[in-house]
Length: 136
Image 1 (cartoon, rainbow, N blue to C red):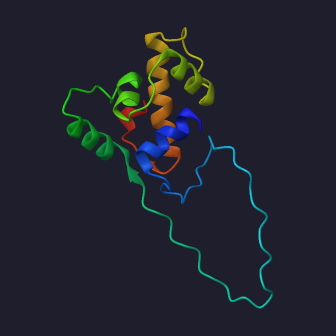
Image 2: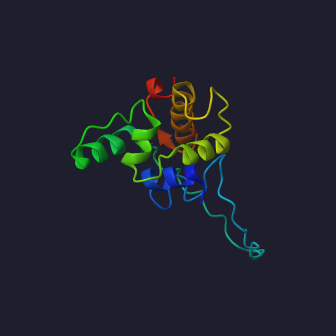
Image 3: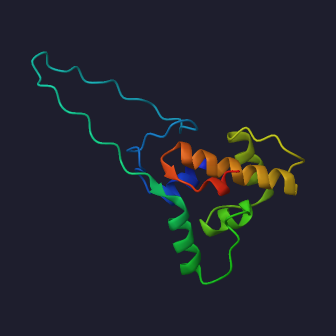
């Protein structure tokens, strides 16, 4: 599983707000062939879209439950640590590749800031409710 996939799963759960289908940054999975629909099947109304997941509320609750200080709002290392994920330089380099972040040298403050913003933006694109200040 990708690093970003692990982040989504840690915040959204197994299915997520889009029923397991996320826009962009999709996990590589083999698609099963669709079963043919009967010709006389009645039209089914489309399911209502799921409400956006409040990313800030979830992360704030996780930080409170952890019982130790966390600067997850600005630090990619603290965010990954809070989610129980690998925050090593190698993991952040992989995440930067997944999200196409090309800012500063690997592990630099510039890259880490850009990576944090890219993660928050990607979470918003995938059904998360993320405050604008976390993406700017």
